[in-house]
Image (spheres, rainbow, N blue to C red):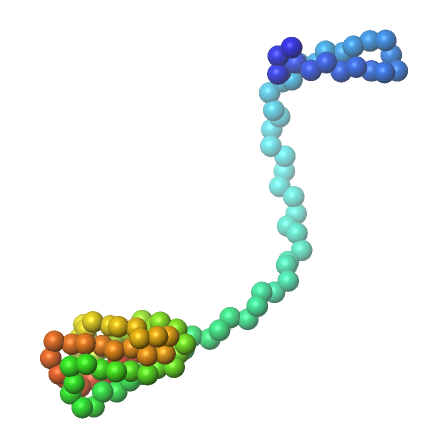
Length: 109
C-alpha cells in the first residue's frame, strides 16, 4: 500500500474502507494572542567611568571598578580622539599605552 493510501478497519462492520489522502487544505485563521508572560528579571543599569589624566604620561593605569571589560575612548586636551593599546588587567583595571606622553580623558562604559 502506498503512503498516500490508508486502510481503515471498522470493527463494528464487516467492511474495510480504503481512503486516499488528498492535498492539504488551506491554512486556518490565526488564533488570538495568549496571555502575557511573567516579567523578566530587572536589568543592570549601564555604568560609566571618566578618568582624567592630568600629568602627561605614555602609559595610563586606570582602576575603574566597573566589574566588567568596558569600551574605552580617549581624547587629548584639545578633544581629539587618541588611539592607544588597551590591556585589560582584570574586570576592574586597565592600562592604556600610547606612542607619546600626553594628558587627557578616558571614557569607559
